[in-house]
Image 1 (tube, rainbow, N blue to C red):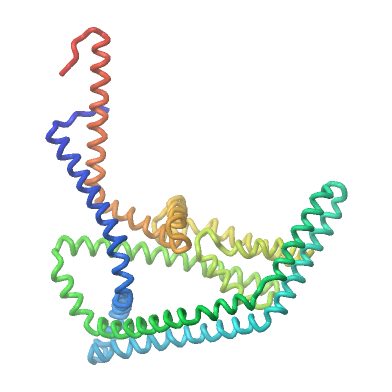
Image 2 (cartoon, rainbow, N blue to C red):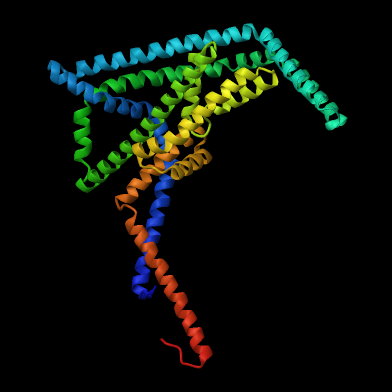
Amino acid sequence: MEYTQLSWHERGQLWLRLGLRGALALGALALLVWVGLPLASLLSPFLFALVVAWVLNPAVRWLQGRSSGSRKVISMILVILVFAVAVGVLFGLGWVAVNQIRSLFDNRQSLLDELLDGVVNVINSVGGWLEGLGGLVPQGVLTSSEDLIGALLDWVRGLDYDRWLTEMAGQAPSMAANVSGFAVALVVFMMASYFITGDYPRLRSELTGRVPVMTRDFCRSVKHIFMGAFGGYIKSQLILSFGVFLILTAGFLLMRQPYGLLLAVGLAVLDFIPIIGAGTVMVPWAVVDMVLAQYGEAAALMAVWGVIVLFRRFAEPKILGDQTGLSPILSLVGIYVGMKLGGVLGMVVGPLLLLVCINLAKLGIFRPVLDDLALAAGDINAILRSGRKTDQAGEDGAPPHS
């Protein structure tokens, strides 16, 4: 491949463009970290209210067309209805959680005794299995294992739960202050949801009217790409999780497992999180059953987990590819990088952001930068090859070319 050197004027313009693009990218990143995120945190009630207004706008518009009523009245009714349902669900879940936590503390000693009994049974089973091995296991290993287990049991028995309760009670004032701040933010969020939903068409027209046409078209394309990627990814994960829920429900019903439906719901929710999956619970559960000689339940659990693995192995590439167009290896890259940067939330958001970047690249947004980088690489290669030709010409005794 033949590379051509640039003139000094062209080279200066090229590196000036690359420098400006790099400086603008770093400036945008710094602005996002030091200004955008704190500002978003400060205005979070209004941003969430804007999302609520965007979601409710189609329903408000449809009801307004059907009833010819006032948009503000319809918006108020919908906002009140949505918040009433949300508060009712949260109150019910909170009530159940508080009762279960209170029951847990009231019965903590009996639960601790049951836990210790279970640990002792597991230890005895492991000890009996090791004794069955005879002289294959050195006596020192058995002695150190027994000492370690005894120290673990002493540590569990010596836990001071009353001190933990006292420390939690000491943090009650700060928790109360946080609750009061949350209550104020919630009231502001509800009021802002009503105001923005009622005036959504006017606010949207005023905002878009101040934006240039090219910028508006670009933002519309980015929005279309993001919503398509987000909707496709979430839809694919919901389909897979629902399939896992059906497998778990059928398996637990066949096993005659108490609370099988609740377990299926919990494990399906856990399976929604990439990499973690239902196996993080089912495999240790089966191992404990094996130690306790409950071989039938252990085999059933592993069979159900095997069906889930096969379902995900064959269905996930197809469903994820059909809904998002993202290949399995790129999904894995997005999950891993997201996990490193943002933890569990990053594992869910990582493939989504990767898909958005890929679709933006297909639109040609990064094409000028890539072209300049290719031009700079060609210029550098031409300079290096020119220097090598000059050295070779000097060794042969020929005059160097200018």
